[in-house]
Image (tube, rainbow, N blue to C red; front, side, top):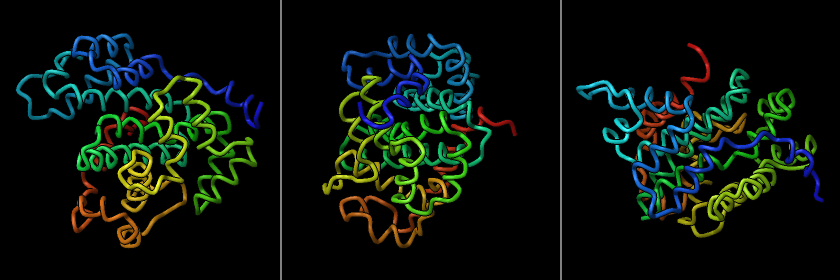
Length: 275
């Protein structure tokens, strides 16, 4: 039994509706009715889907009042993203009033948005890239739920990934990547998502691999105003480091991506903290 194993067993389980949505990513037979049924099994998440669908479809002639209407108006892929964001938001909710911890969730949402964009451009599955990146720091969320006070301090002080990972091991015996890999196995996440969770801070050399896409999306998110804790990236500096296969897919002025990130992050966190 490795270090931190007992902690992993105490981390709250991932929402059941989220588990079913993740499994549906690998199910080619999943249809609109099946996705709608999954979402409707959770009343809270259904309400959030309807709220966010109305926000995203502001120009629609009629107000969306059911999950099915949301799917028909926005499309199944858009609804999947909203559903996953709403699901993970519900998991994060207990720590959302802690500002450093909330900011870590914002970083995950921004990373997911950028991952989907990059994955689509290199002909990877954008929806799986979004979900993988959204869950890439699930180990961090789990450890934050267990150690909110310690993580609030840690996220406000660690200025590098190495410092963050080393300090996490001091707190719990595990880094968030190691904790996330164990949780992903415990919760039966698909292997490709588990790879992103485990290796997004130490990605493979091939830039179009999912873990590498999530890695660079995370660094870009940090440079565009959504850092992981105190690990702030310089946009010009990150732009020079992004592998050519990915850099050519980005606008010359990467800051043009900021408004879309702001919208996605705003939608994801709006239900967590009152204005």
